[in-house]
Length: 293
Image 1 (cartoon, rainbow, N blue to C red):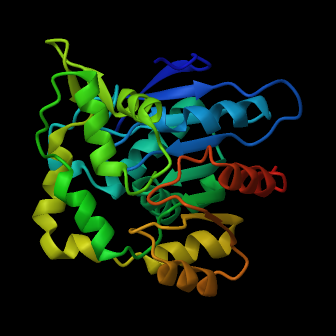
Image 2 (cartoon, rainbow, N blue to C red; image 1 turned 180 degrees about the vertical axis):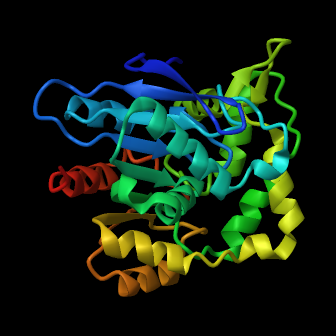
């Protein structure tokens, strides 16, 4: 099961010399619109955005979906302690500089939302608008502990059927409506074919090093000041999965109180994190972007 190629491949270089990758979806002809920078979650890659990126491009917006360092087709870091949002944010700014993009809409899923907040702290003016997908300045300990438990852990997946079973085991709680074809497609997004022809997870296991080094502190990041700068200075949309164990209903309510002008949508029946191809998420994103240049 393969996706239809609707993008070009773009390489860019980090400050510390890594060769990094992004998918570049060209916007359809028509009125010029600000591009979208799409940033994935902790163990994922740019393939997660293929569906929504294709739709956004058809609507006239160029989309650059990155493979954060250590994931997908981007180089692995020489120093695993650089696997942190502040460094990822600098990498994204390098992409903007090397593509001549001065301002963009940022779309961040999970860790990608944390990176978006970090970018706002480093160079706020580059973010014209922000979409935070199932992430906030505070996270529920239960969800982060669940993710940390499997991140960087070796897996035994000798076949693509085994890879599909693995992603169902680790993500089934978020997508209870998925069937065998959905999990097979999911596996193709997060695994690649290894040197021996067997599926291997498409990220550097060492991305877990900073998480384990931080210990309990990794479970309670306080990014409220960054969120305040982000959401109060520009249009912002918060997407939450109805059953998310990372962005609890209580944290989302607190975010909405801190930023009352922020748009909000809850995706029914979905956990962490919505794929953004769900009707509620897709409709909210397009409505939100209709007011963004």
